[in-house]
Image 1: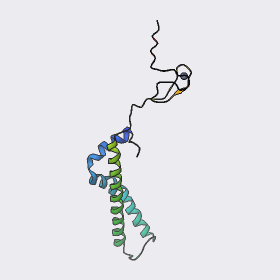
Image 2: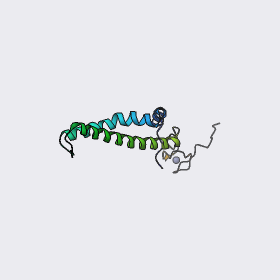
Image 3: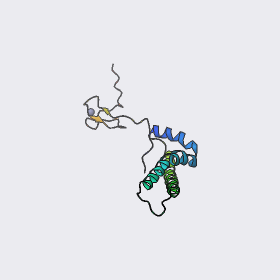
Image 4: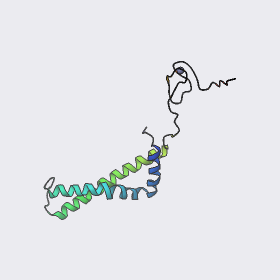
Length: 130
Ligand SMILES: [Zn+2]
């Protein structure tokens, strides 16, 4: 199982998923990380690295755009699917009980427990003073 989204991730994705899969992929992958990768690919060819075949810059540009499109689409698709899967699980609970110290002996009482593991003191007792 993947970790649940934190409440802030959940809120972010609630907004982002309104775009729909393809607009999400275009906006958050093709125009950003994909474009960066395309520029990077173009520059490496211009610098003479990984250049095979053609020496025409138009060909490098076409190659770079293809790399950007393929990378952006695949990564965006995977990210969308993964985020939607986690979104369906819901956000992790905000209301997790914090760890507390036992009021009697000072030992740590684990989150969710009401009884001290060291001395057996419990929150449940209602000692009404008289
Ligand atoms: Zn205790």
